[in-house]
Image 1 (cartoon, rainbow, N blue to C red):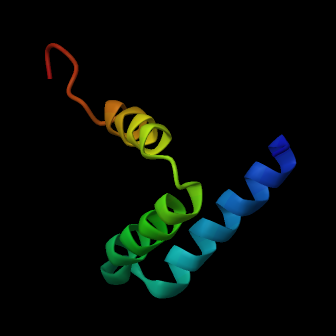
Image 2 (cartoon, rainbow, N blue to C red; image 1 turned 180 degrees about the horizontal axis):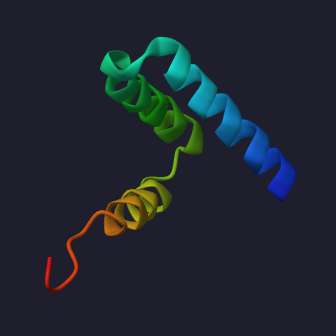
Image 3 (spheres, rainbow, N blue to C red; image 1 turned 120 degrees about the horizontal axis):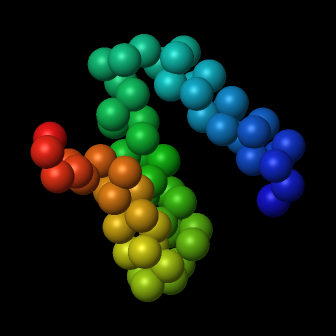
Length: 63
């Protein structure tokens, strides 16, 4: 995927969440994740993606 394509799909993801509204955004992301997990069909790859995503939200020392 090119940088331009990545930007386009990320923009589409954000637009979908905005259209659905904040109350539905969490459920939308959960459904999207399940669909993506099914499509990826590789438990090791999905586990790495989950860990990578969670890493951004882990507290850093001093927090």
